[in-house]
Length: 277
Image (tube, rainbow, N blue to C red; front, side, top):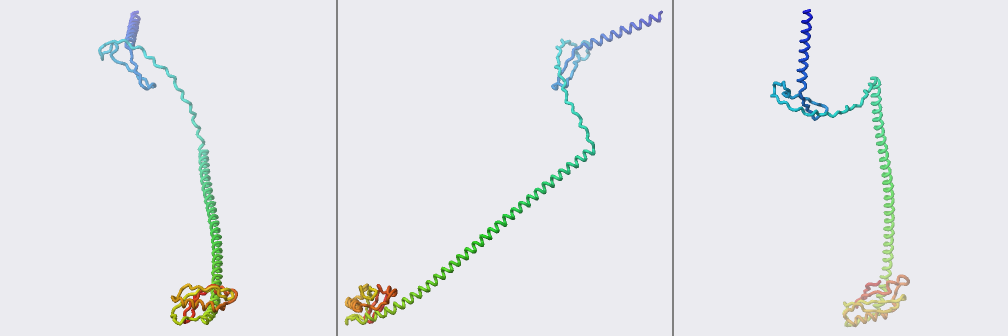
């Protein structure tokens, strides 16, 4: 029986001690706690300030009234979209796909290269055609210019030849006409000299110029002294000799034209023709 009593005593003491420990612990944990909120809402740091409880031995005891509890806003957790992991393709299919891509890229490069070469050939062909066309046009122009130049030279040569021939002909005609004039001039001088009575006191070295106008038959129409010898008697005798010799010997037809009106230079020593024509 005594052993049983001792057992009950020990059990009673054990339960009393356990109750005391629980009370002490409940008092210590009932002290207020300060919650420090960080700027980052996802991280919350809590700190306990020592010395606020009655049993603290570090800081002098000064029990303050507990602050009102801070209600932390409840945030709904953001549900992240579920990303389904890509199923790895079979290794052989990946290799084949890469080979196909490389082949297509190579074929594309070759096709572009062929296209560029074709364009270059077409451009060279067009340039050659344009050059040939320009060359043909230039050759045609040169031919036309050459033919035109030959024609102009031929025409110029022909005109020059005709002009030369005309000049030769006119020269020949002029020489022939001059020969006729010289022939009839000598006959006229001879006729006048036969009728000229020179005054005895006249200076044989003096001369005068007479302008004689004739009709186609040689009839003297008028005689004028254009330049006097200085001796009026000599001038009058010369004019009278021309009138006495009328009609003067002249050619017929077109050869008469030089004798229609002409100037004659006369001297007492001889009669000199001048300016007939």
